[in-house]
Image 1 (cartoon, rainbow, N blue to C red):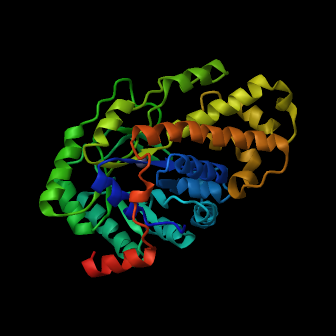
Image 2 (cartoon, helix red, strand yellow):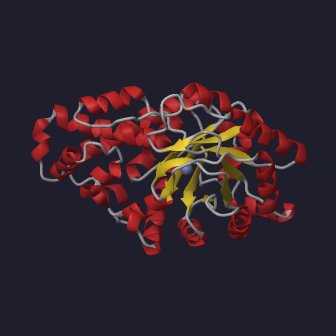
Image 3 (cartoon, rainbow, N blue to C red):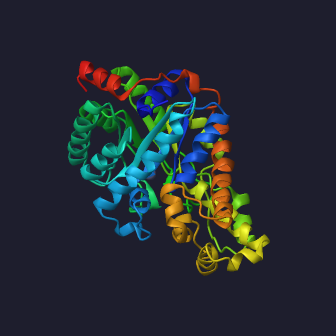
Length: 385
Ligand SMILES: [Zn+2]
């Protein structure tokens, strides 16, 4: 079926009290695997492309320096792949821009075919964040596109999003922000952290989510709360990576138990990126560890060399540029590259499958209304948001 606006998926989480994982992708094969595993569990799917993932998918191995032009190309590549797989899928799929940096990034994503965008104004003063987010809502809602904002600052590092310290979201500010901007979803800061170094024993301030949700109910406002920086950093994968030549240190995530709990307490969307990166990195290391003859095969030898020289990295975007056309378009030129693609797909299935079960979105696909962007635009128009 055609992509749905993310709001349709979020409304179902609200109505039936569960959470939906939202998974970041940086390659066509990842998008394919994310959709397949959701199909297997009969869950709707939220696929995310981060702002810099769009630059990477636009062909920029040095994605941090990606231009708006690169992001436009990459947004198109991701959207084309996701649309193709979703078209033949029985589950609803939404494509969401994660951490849109500015209005131009959001427009590039929407033009490329994204059905949801995040504008991250969390580093701005409150009033300026409202103003910027409102601008994006005004551009997105007439297209039926969902908008996610962010209030409060998460600590940690993820692509260009970096903060040394966190500021928890004030629930009263959140309600004012939602009323003034008309956002459909709001990322709150309540103890999660971007990246793989969340510190051992991170504790979520779940009362912030509960209080915000209660205030919204009293005000009669719809807005789905989003938990960023929520990777679980499975310790078995960290150990395996290190046993296969990696040198990861201090890698800790948010416990699955806590995420499961908040998924019943008002958190509707849980963003996961690091776990997928870790599983794919482990699979790549394993491939070359157990098949030493592949280390010198021409098309994938450069991947092995990167794995060898960058032992403390776990972002597949560091290792995979030697097969850029495969990542961007899904081309598989030979059977060695096919083995690498299998590593990517298997990593996605392992992590995403686990979390679909943990977050309880199993079997929820039929509960999501199959609404089109045009119908959603009409609803916003009537509601004046
Ligand atoms: Zn985030």
